[in-house]
Every structure is written in C-alpha cells, then in structure tokens.
Length: 604
Image (cartoon, one colour):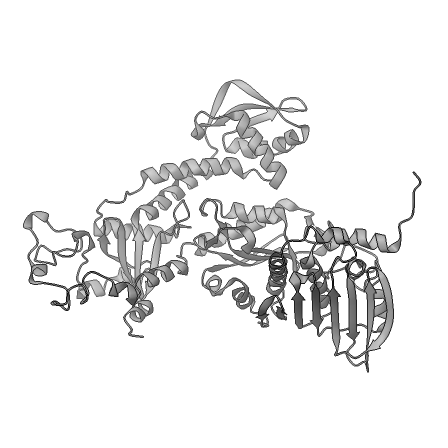
C-alpha cells in the first residue's frame, strides 16, 4: 500500500475531529477569538442546539480583507510568531476557523474600526467561496450553519438539541466568569435569552450572575501566593455544596481549564468537611509565568501541564484550607433560608392552636393551659419552679429576658450567649443582632474531631509491624509512584519498600486501622496515584476513623447541659476552624438575624 499526501480538505476535517468535537466546541473557539480581538460585547445566537446555526457577533478590532482571507487557512494566526513558550492569548493554533469551515457552511463578515466598508469570506465543506465586500458594523460576525453536514457520521454521535444547547450555555458561563468586564448575550430559537451584564472588576458580582446570588453570601475569598504563583477567587462554604462538580470553575492565566490535578486539589482541600457524594462550589484563578505552564497539550486547549505540579497542588490545597480555617466556621445562608420557609405564615395557619381549630377559643388556650407544673418535675435550665404553661413541652421552655440577661457581655461574641436548651439537643443563643440555634452533638463532634486530627498531625502515627512482610505484585510504574511517596506513608504509619522491579513489600500498617487488607490498601493507593498523582486515600481512611471516634466521644443528643457548659461549647466553636459543619458535612448551627425575625412578624 503506497503512502499518499492527503488533500487540504481531508486534513482540515481530521483536525476538526479534535478541535470541534460538538457545537459547544465551535462556540468556545469563536468566543475565544472575539475575546482575543478585544471585544467588550459578545452576542451568541444558536438554533437546533448549535447544529443548525451558531452566530457570534463581537465589537472587537475586526479584520481587513487581507487578514480575513488568511483567517480561514490552516495555521494562520496573529497570536504567536515563533515560540510556544510565552502564550498570552486564548487562541494560538490557527486551526479553529479552517476546521469549522471544513465540516460546515462558514461565513465571516468583518470590518476594522475606521474602515469605510467591511468584507466577507465564505467556506463550504472545505471549499473557499472567495472574498467580497459586505456591509458590516465595526467588529466581526461569524456564522456557522449546518455543522457537520460534510461529515454526516459525526452527526450520529451528537446528543439531543437540548443537551447540546446546555453544553453551549456552560461554555458561555465559564467565559463570562473569566471575563467580567465583557457583556455576554446568549439567545436563539431554542432558548430564552440569557444576558450577563458587564461588572467591570467586580468578579464576585459576575460569579453571582452565573452561580446565583446565594454564592455571594456563602463564598470565602481566596488570595494566596507561593513562589510567584498567584491563586485568587472564591470558594464556597463547606455547607454550601452541590451534587456534582460542575460548579467548580478553574482558570489558568484567564483560560478556562478542566484539569484533573486542579479538581483533585479542590477535592482534597474539602476532604474532611464535605458530605459523602457532595461537591464544593468554587471559582479559582491561577496566574503564573506562561513559561511555567504548557497549554499546548491538546487542540481543545482545556488541559494544561505545569512545570511544578506539586507547587500548584500545594497552593490550591493550602490556600483553600487556610481560608476555611479563617472563615469557614460560619453557617451557610441557605440554612437560614430553610428556617425562614419553615416559619412562613402559611405554616402557622395550619397549627392546631389556631382559631379555626378552636372556634370558641380564639387563642386556642383554655384555663387548663395555665395550671401549675407538678412540683416533682423540678426546674431545668431556662425554667423557674413557679407555675408555667403546661401545654408547652418542658424541653421547649426558655428563660424570660431580664436586665442581667440583656447586659450579658457574651452576647457580643459571634455565637452569642446561651439562653435555652430545647429538646435536650439544640442550644438557642442570643447575639447582638439575632439568634443562633446550635446542634450540640454535631458541634461537639466537630470539636473532638479537630482535636484528634491536630494530635494525629503533630507526630508520626503509631504503626503496627507485620510478623511476615506482605509482598504485593504491581506494575513497575505503580511501584515507582508508591516508592516516591514512601516517606509520606511512613508518617501515616504505613511502612513500604521496593521489593524488586515489580513488587512492594508492606512491613507496617497504621495501628488505627486495626486488622487491614494490606494488599488491597496498597493497590488502592497505587490506583489513586496513577489517576490523581496524590495519595489522599490513606489520610482519608484515618480521618474517617477519627471522625467515627469523635462521633462516639462527643456530647450526645438528649443530654441536658448547664448554662456554663453551653457557653463553653459556643466559645470553643468560635475558636475552632471548620466548626460550622460536623464531620459529615452537616451544618452545626443556623443563624437568624433580627431583621429576618422582624420580617416573619411583618415588622419590616
């Protein structure tokens, strides 16, 4: 079989298979071109999920006739000259437009600012249609029709129009977060118009547009630097989580990326604070010297490679954990929203003590409601030995406000001063501007866990030696990865060493794990290292045991606490990082502002 030189059209179609995987890929490439051209307003219109029509209109610098003709030729670009070591633009390969033109009907109309008229170039299934004058506003309009008509086999692998439209929306959302100073408008016959108004330098305002207003109230600012690498952005509170990782946005030098290492670092940073199966919300931007990152890994440009991956991972994990330790103890506002909904007037109207339930007693309270409490019951915290409301459960009674209570200096603390314990599990505390309800078991569980973890991290963990070392056969590359992390494993109580080219000998296992399947543990760690270049699994198992021990060693629900015990718990929570959620990721307290309370009663 003789070797042949492929035609230019076939070469472009092969390239399109990598660059333009689906309509969303075409939108990404066209929006990147508009941003590189300095556009401040970008409009995207689609039809048929992008398969029938994609139109991207921008007010960027535009192209003259000569540049317009070159733009649809392969490897023609204005963004790099000789070197790939210093890429500062989103696009640079010069493949997007010719790739799109090889599989669709492409028309580009452009006019530079100050030019008297515009020009248009067309490409249909890889065949150029020539250049001609055309009326145009300053900027560029790129219109793609009948995507993949020239490669019908690709159309068979497209998803539904709804799914393709959703993928396009996600691309625009990511671009909108990365460039808050640009106005984005997404519209079309198959969707309602979505607009992201420009917010200038207010990145959090743009994030709120994309992720919802709740993100603004439940985000912690990240601002850290290590060896010239800068990490900025916002990370959600541990109690503000989602069911998938689609709400994690990462950017490298302004470029949206979906890098496994970054996602792994975010996961590790939240490891001890996130419920099983839940994912944090985060928008993080990494800025570093372009020479230290390779963005030319794949034609789609969504993967990157760092010269020092350990530095980048450590920066992500350390910065997020430091921010969570600093501000992560506050409760998510979504909990307050749930509490407000539970106290809606509609709920009150259905209560058994309403007038409807007892027409002859408008307040629903008879004389028996004021009968004295049996003396044998004895007073509890927040109760007095005098007569009270027998119709109210004893565990729900609270102390009356007094002058001494109102002047309690503990009210000035973030979690306030304890006022009552209800249902022998929930502490009600008064703050300067509202009240706080604390789950005493969940809160103390977190405090015990953090104390145990601090003890574990302060010294190497005890190891349990094996009478006979267990030899685990593994591929040589897995053995190399495990051996490289042997010192870190040793601090966690796992003693391993190389045993020939394709085996690992396990001599010690962490004492905390008790009887353990050493071979299974080592294989799991090897798989984790291969997938994520990290071995968080062992740490996670040890933390899980510590969390279990903390759960059983903490204050149980149903235990009545004294006032001083409650206040001591509140002060410990304020001083402990991550106390806003328990070891299982549930909130430990809910805060209700005085303005919220007044709104419930129609006073605001």
